[in-house]
Amino acid sequence: MTTQTIPPSGGPAPMASPAGRGAALLVLTFGAFVVGTGEFAIMGMLPEFAASLHLSTADAGHAITAYALGVVVGAPLITILGARLSRRELLLVLLLLFGFGNLLSVAMPTPGLVEVARFMTGLPHGAIFGVSALVAASMVERTRRGWAVGRVLSGIAISTLVGAPFSTFAANHFGWRVAYLIIALFGFLTFVGVWRFIPADAPNRTNSPLREVTALCNAQVLLTLLSAAIGFGGMFAIYTYLTSVLQNVTHVPEWQVMLYMVVWGVGMLAGANIGAWLVDRNINLAAIFALAGSALAMLVFAGVLHNSVADARCVPDPGLRQRSGASFANTVDGFCRGCANPCGLP
Image (tube, rainbow, N blue to C red):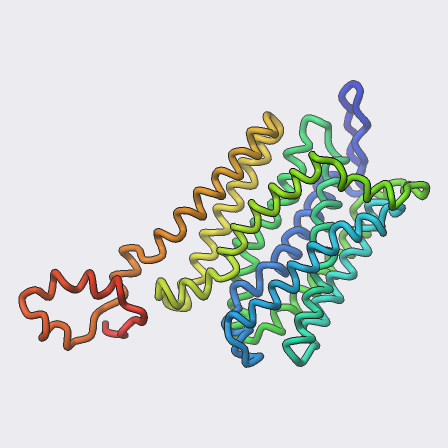
């Protein structure tokens, strides 16, 4: 069954999927979920990852940096090299690279080699999201493109809501390598879905890779890249060490870390849907709200690390009661706020 849609005047006809637009968008959303999980998984299991490779948490973060470097290098490089491929062809190649990169991450025995594998896995990351968004937009009317792109990219938010917490659970119980093996298998499953459900578009074999490079000379393109780098950079800086902060600063028990990650994912999912709705109405206003909201969240984050719930968990040692006498109730709050480690009292 194919979807038939009458295009708006002056716009191209939406592409028809072999099994319907709904199935195609579902595959693209699942792909965004899998790639997002591959990116965020290590952030939730960083302590276990570090311990298994005998690294400090800070040194283990180099694997995240390697992945991010792969994203930075891969996005423009793949755009240039894949200029003459159709969107479907390029998406299939990218998903294969993503799947094999995660398999290499599982197989590599040393921290240095794991970082190389993470770099390779990061290469197709940005391009997968970009091509998926373009494919989604091509299957709907012009007035619904924001909705289609938002629906596909909501897979990223779902990955923080479901994928990252599940990966943390899998890493804690079975090891981080098992978690990445599952992600790799899901990547190959997405490849099959794209092969089956995404419509084949006509490639532009005459397109010049050099023409793609000239886009980087466009001031508007550079401003967009800068805005994304600043907006996402701050958010991911928090999310990268969220588990470590919760365990070592806020002192929440291990099982509660997953709950915090789920709350984060709920916020991202809500923001993705609200943003998609706003983009179809005023794209400039959507960008302003997104950046302002991200900046506000980052400013608030530092102030809520030692909140009342966290303070209540940090109970002073028994000797303090004897030393403080009647003033114990007045001194406990200040003591807890300066406490670096929970004392373990009930």
